[in-house]
Image 1 (cartoon, helix red, strand yellow):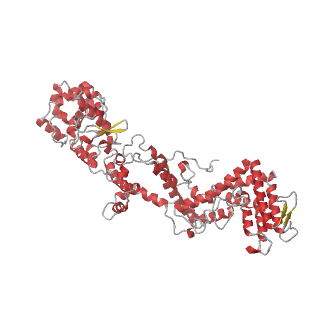
Image 2: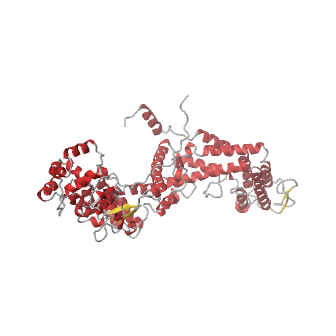
Image 3: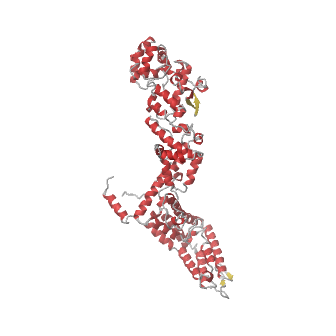
Length: 625
């Protein structure tokens, strides 16, 4: 790609670590939050309590407050209102640090240590999201694949050729032997006298049967002109009946000349009408030809070689043109060929050649027995393995992995919390909570000392009023008062408190979401204060992105089939007693088949649509004036 000035400038910014910085609105909101009235008051109270730490826990006061009591007090609202005091919600396990802002700032520093590092993380995250979303969207859409026409996994991996004949090799050879007889672009007339007439016209062989046509009241020149001038022409039934009658009179050397010019190598053809008889044309495979009947595959012939019940009940207008059984069989064959996607772009020679070596799921009983293209258990597995994405179908945004430095979603969430605390403060709704913190500080500072050392006397009209034999008892009582005060607040101002709780929890949860999926993408940091620390794990976990990328290449691996190459090794290590192990082998066979089908211009209908149902617009700044 050609470089531009802007590309050069941007590159310089990344290389010199001047390109990226933490979102300024996010930094401002964090600062405002850290200094709001409840966080400041709580931090001051905790500092007072720690200053009066009991000597049993390393403090200097034998009548002080035990650390376990202080920790219980600090965690009083961790479950209900951690946002008031900059705490980590009790639902999350964070090590070492116990404040949300410390946890978030550390995470931001990890992701944005340098501009270059963030650029790399962004690139890796983008690859992870693209790969993962393709699988998640495919899982969501997988049930639709073949929902109307799925017949078997063999049909799926052979472009439905096994739905025409499960013995592809013998049918492929029979098809090759028919030379230039069939025109797959005209399935509407296949197996009719007109189809045979057009075959002769294509090879300039109509003159070979001119006399017979004329004897039956047909003008060969007029027929050829009409057909050439109108490619979609369907001759009337009377004309086709006369053609069939003419064909019955052709045999011997005249027939041999026709077979030669059509390059037909099928043996035991004794009359030109035999070229309309599938039993004659496909002597090695006709018993296994199947057609589609209301979504189910039905044999065209029974075991004795007679038209099956399905065929006998098939209606076709051509039954007045030629023997009814042959007309119905050919109609069923035409229906059958329609199962092969893009067959109109192929020829019998190309299709037959590739059908000779098509691979099925023979020996892979689990795969072969599947009754749906993508089992519900597999769909559920992908949706379970990759959970937490905020996009449609549970898909991921890049911001789900590296959005924090850009302020996603923290800028808005912290602003919501700041606004709620400010509004509640303006309404004096926080007064009770703030008074409890003030009294707790007073207990630690000796403002409520009792008659004897360590005893506490909290006067009337104050939170926790009463006489306590120890400071521990007084702080414990104030902890209970704190819980009751917030319960009352959340009842009276439920909309406001619920909004703050939700926003705060979303931000904490988002950090964990990023850490989890960064880890799955192969990115871990020495210190995150969680179990995702690379220093606390026994090596890095296997990257799921790498696994999905590997899986996506199974078609390619299947074609690496020389001695000692990937296909051989994978077959030898695949566990064929499991669905997954068999699927490895089946997918490689599918890849080899796809090459052959492409050569034959046949489209295999085995691709799951990974297009998301909804594409949401991003919050992009307007550039218009």
